[in-house]
Image 1: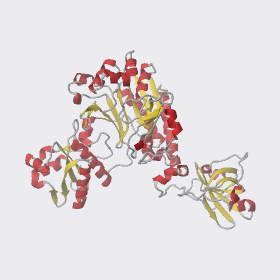
Image 2: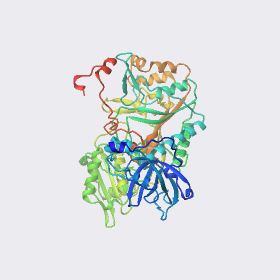
Image 3: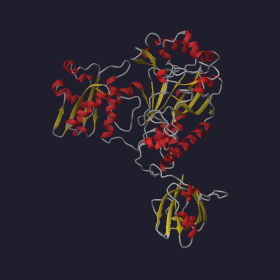
Length: 600
């Protein structure tokens, strides 16, 4: 655009007097200078209107050909997303625009400065757009100009600021921990960083500051917190990114309730920032109870439809014919009796996709109770099944069995929990305006790994063990309970934590129960085990997912909407074109040669 380049102005000493979204009726009669982007242009001949946008909102500016011909002529060159500076006077509009916060006034322009031109953007810079997410992320610098991303990032800032205030008031010190550390097994793949100085050796980006925050307790810091970046090389989904932000904290000499109290204050005040009222203390439930009652370790409590074990209503012969192995769980879906045969077939397929052997239905319809399994279990058992689930007229009872049993948990309950969520959404029974927090405690210390055919840590290997279960560590690990806890909100896990192991002898016992040899222990955790032997206080903590918290408070369904520069589900930054190849000289400096099959 060479001809446009010639007309561009310099900012010089020009200074903004008002943000675009700040104007109100009380500003009428005042001189004003605004700086921003052209959001919309309307040319009516003698009058030319521009909507000027900055991060605070939009103000209408008016160019009058008769009174300010020079400014009007220059405004004819302005197009969408041009960067401009406007000098003028604020006046009351003849007809207010109630859809704009600044709709009672407009700016009569005396002078226009065009500071930069712009190509036509690939999508409109508006709140509601139909552009694909990939396009939005590729042109993220344009997407960020829209009001919604502005609001989400402003909310994120305010939430983090409020968290820091709470932590400071409660006597916590913010301490930074290293970004380049050593690789330790913490449940996901590490991101490895090769060392140029030490060829063949690697740093790892932290999956969490776990070991360092425990060492801070050994160092006598007493109360630590950090708003920290963490990195996990795992598959992506709507509420997961390769790099994510946590509120990480640790306390010395805590009771479990002390940590709960801190986090409850954090969450109540974070909610208040978003205009949401939350009440503490939050309720507590045991892991085994939430699995059997809701079929999930992150249950959504905004609606009922609780699960019930109904195995006893399926006689032996029926179990054999239906190939039921293990328990059967059921729940009543309000208003589901009107489901058609096709809808029930679709529900059965969904159940099977979640691991069901089969799905069995009872309709409590006005014309009577009917069931897909009445011939197999009998009318009396059908009635008992409906009664146990508390089914009312118009309800649909859904019962499921699992195809494969899972050691240490209720497989059928987990399948039923997925269907509960699906039907809760489909039937519109979830109270979207509710905020239901829950603490879950009593987790098993170990979970069965089908791939490794052994018991592995359900959380990380530094999680404390319920004192009276210590004697079962080697003999019956599946019965050992941890001192871990999760915070759940509306079906999302917000954070996980535990009282830690602070004794070296117990930590070594746990590592050995996980099958780690003395050599492996020293290689992976030697420095940490040494630190434990120098008077480690009892301690515990938790990490909250900031991205997930802000996502929920902003009413979004993906954390990508509250992260300034998010990656796609294929782990790519489309704007920065990352990951990318590097040249051979960089690889040579690191002493790295790519395998033939792994070259770009």
